[in-house]
Image (cartoon, rainbow, N blue to C red; front, top):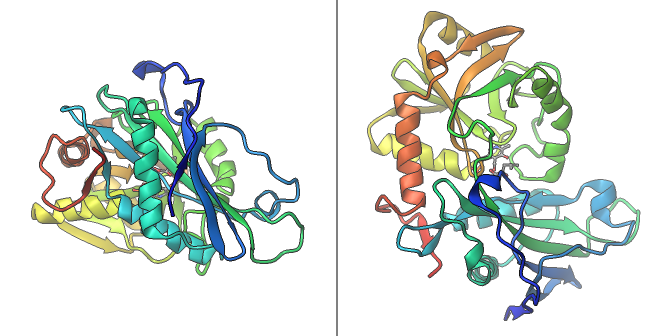
Length: 353
Ligand code: PLP
Ligand code: COI
């Protein structure tokens, strides 16, 4: 299916790198297409703008929405590249399967990403640590209130030049373990990237922010005992000489950054375990000094050191609230590959030029 292109006749002013933050500025164009009668129709790039939706649209009432997040990086030679976009495409279709939303042809999805990035190429920033964040999203758009799997849907990709996700940048963030609300349950939607998972997290997030923490670390929804993930990133802990990250049990997001970090660490000979990790074990490791480093990882958050961990009103400081050697090395290696400063030996880079 050919992608139709309608260019804007009113390009916007670019915003300087120090004012970008995360997800506040948007490029000139967006990709969109509609699903009806069992097929996707009219894939097109159009000027970025508001949508007009029926007030009964499924997305407003029953939360039929999924999304993805990936970045386009500006290399030193001026070229632009994506990091493992096929992983995001696959995950989007897995999320769609969970939510009974239509699948998207992988080739068309990739072409949509490439075409949008090419057209908005001038929006890929070049200052250190900046990139063009791509946000594909898909939602049910039936104009009636019956609770039913959707027949019509809308798929868009918008693009936002971004700097650091956390105001702390690469400084350690403080994270609070949430012991009341849960994010996901067995059989639920935890492994899918659906909007509802995030909406339901706001209350705990607000509580954490009021106490001075950046985000919450979720415990499992069944026993409220095992560490799962942070609001917008997966987590890893160096306990002794073992690097531990919660196993993919169905209730946490299978992060692309998580998968990449595991691979990088294993390739360098680190012992990495994907296993159950209880909050009690983590507390014991904090108390005994066995916990050397902790960090979160995600597309938006990159590799983000965790300096303080609050559990049951007890606050633990990790590595003197400084970025540790493994975290720094992982950050340098991952971002080196993403921005093209370190050779990609694993086929992770998808060049746009
Ligand atoms: N966990 C959650 C809840 C997230 O929102 C994200 C961000 O996408 C991640 C983990 C990390 O996933 P990825 O590395 O694919 O961006
Ligand atoms: C991402 O890292 O891409 C995310 O989706 C995290 C968040 C902004 C929801």
